[in-house]
Amino acid sequence: MGNLPEKLQKKLIEREEINTLRALPENIRGIDFSSNDYLGIGQNNTVFEKAISILSEKGIANNGATGSRLLTGNGILFSDAEEFLRNLHQADSALIFNSGYDANIGLFSSVPQRDDIILYDEFIHASIRDGIKMSNARNYKFKHNDLKDLLSHILPGQEKNTNNQREIYIVTESVFSMDGDSPDLKALSALCRKYKCHLIIDEAHAIGLFGSNGCGMVQEMELQENIFARIITFGKALGCHGAAILGSADLNKYLINFARSFIYTTGLPPHTVATIIAAYQFMTGSAGLKERELLHENIALFNQEKERLGISSFFIPSSSAIHSCIIKGNKEVKKIAQIIQNNSFDVRPILSPTVPKGEERLRFCLHSFNSKEDICIILQNLAIAIKKI
Image (cartoon, rainbow, N blue to C red; front, side, top):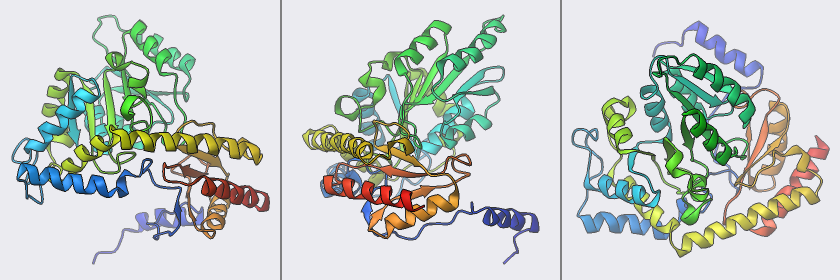
C-alpha cells in the first residue's frame, strides 16, 4: 500500500491543528433534527411498497441500468418519470441526472460559453461553484440576496456586449442550503427580463415545501415561464436520490449532447427511478399535503419558541425547514452540539471551511414528524447550552 505523499499529509495535519479536519460521523442516535427528509418520505413504507409495485407492474427485475442512458441504460421508467416531472412542474422538458451534484456540474460546465458571464450568489452551493470552475465563461459573485450589487455586475457586462454575442447567466437558490433564507425571486426575475439575462434557480430545498403540491417556490410565484433552467433534487424532501433539470426542449437536447456528467455515467438503477415516481405521487397526494401542513406548523412553532426563549438573535431568519444558529468557532459549536446530542437529539454542527470562518453553526432541519414537545425541548436545551458556553 503506497504512502500518502508528504505534502498531502501536511494538509491533513494543518486541518487537524485548526480543528477543521473532517471525518465520517458515527451513527448518532437521537430525535432527527439533522436530515433533509423534511416530509418523512425517506422512511415511508407506503412509498417503499409503491416503488416495488411500479417495478412489478412494468415487469422490471433489473438490479442496475447496465450502461449510460445514451447506450443501454435508458429504461422505460425514465420516460415515465420525466414526462411526469415535465407536466407537474409546467416545463417543456425534464432531464434526470444521477444527483444534484451531477446536474449542476453538467449544466454549468457545458452551457455558458467562452466570453459569456456567470453571476452567482456568494452563498451558492459548492456543486454549482464546481460546475462554474469547469466552464470557459467568466464568473463573478454578487453579495448574498443583494439585487443592487447584482445590477452593478450586470451593467458593465451589457455595456461591453457590442456584438450581442455575450450571454449573461444569473444563478441563485430559492432556499439556501445553509442559511435557509430566500432571494426576492419576483424582483430577480424582473431584473433578468429587463436586461435579457438567463436566470437559473436551484430548487433543491424548496421542492416538497413550497408551492401547490410541493412543486417549489418558482411555481408558487408563477415564474416558471421566466426561468432558463430549474434544478430540482430528489434527495431532500422526496427522500430518495437523483435530480432533474427543467427547461426548454432545446436545453434538454443540448444537455444530452454536451453535459459530460450525463453522457459518461451509468444511469440510475430502475428501483431508484421507481422510487422517484412513488415519492412524487405521495408528495402530490392528500398524504403529502398533510405532511406539508404539519411541517409548516412546526416551522412556525420553532420561530415562536426561539423568540420566546430570547435566542432568536443567534439565528438567521428563515421560514423554510432550515434554521441555522450561528456559534462562532469550530470548538465552541462542536461543544454545544455534543451537549444537545447527549440529551438524545440528533443535530449537527457545520464547521469551517464548509462555511466561512466565524460563521460556524448548528443547522436545525425541521420535519413534519417532529413533535411539538421535542421542538420546545431542543430549543430549551440550546438556550441553556448557549448560556453555559
